[in-house]
Image (spheres, rainbow, N blue to C red):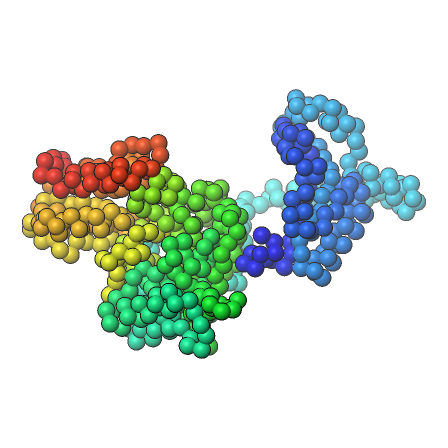
Length: 566
């Protein structure tokens, strides 16, 4: 990553404390290369190998590395060959697995003794001075230890200074309702026209010109926007309000499903046009980068970037949702737990394409269940939006609160071009994000069953409901899965007082998706599960089998044989 435009740091100094211990694994069993720093050859970085016992050589090497980095802005590696005195830790017995090495280490003087003997042999210091310095240092350590024992509590420095000033940690009450993230209609339309208009003095690919013309027609003639426009408008409005936006991931400039087109390439020369960078002279900076093929590395970089820029919207998008598997360490160790472990907030957004369209096991599921199993203590937000407007408000909400939380969004694939997955302009210019969306077509007095769902399956359900002219079923969408919108759900249940049957409908297999989580948070309602049977694979590889399974889900929902919930 070191020389890539979107991830360059101006050079990093990699100081490798090479203690030759991989717990119980010898170095000859741990890698194929001669040196542990041979990875530096990939980026043509200079690598210095230095003996950890040679203090002056190490100091010289570090100074040389710093000068190189400052002059050439390139990575530098320092392989400091040393050893670990007590093996893996002080309680470990390394002689179990490395007896010869640790026999040598036991007889080897420590670095201070080595350097002291060198100075004595060169006549630079006297023996008495060395002993006096050692005595003074031990007295300093003892005074510090005695002082620490007098302290009853340890005060931690608050990180919410500098860029984080003015932000605070969240409270449970913050999630009862989302903030107002609407925008003035005149400003909204003006920005929408700007990002839908291409310059006329250069030549673009004709299909791109038609696409942008269609966007303008959608805006001006139909007064509604699709998913791509809803997303781009979230960025445009934040940029105009002074919030920088950074997006990275595989294929993000165009979008994996050719929907975003945030970067437009000219047809007759190697130049690009970026509509979101041409809004006004006052706008904040917009950057978007097609990333290298390392979800682990890129998500880790963007997570760190978001730490330094709490007033920016930082987005990482997976090419397909299941590609998040490659970044699972970052998700487990940082996104889900850093606020609990280190009291550090972060507002990164993860976009994970998800949905069952018969594309097979590898490109259907973003593993909703994995993220929900990591949710607790309001540590992050998990959303599965069904409309462009709700996605728009979810993104804007990230920077309109007084705190920061990671946001995981399961974004659609087929819905990107679904004729019903559009939002009217007023849906963007009024109110904000809705954690739950009620069934506006339902008459409460006629409803005997409520089907809760989330994401794409809603459109299959509503199509079938309208086709059958069904009046006894209300379809309720959970746009936000976590934090669970308990108050909003209770208000809807109260509204449908005549309902006696409650369903949870999902596309994913029973051991996947949101079901196990929903079963826990809504246990008192005795929900009935309707979805695919348990499966070791996220989805079938047969499109015919997929259609059969999808039809079976809908048939069961609309069956008159459903037993009422207790």
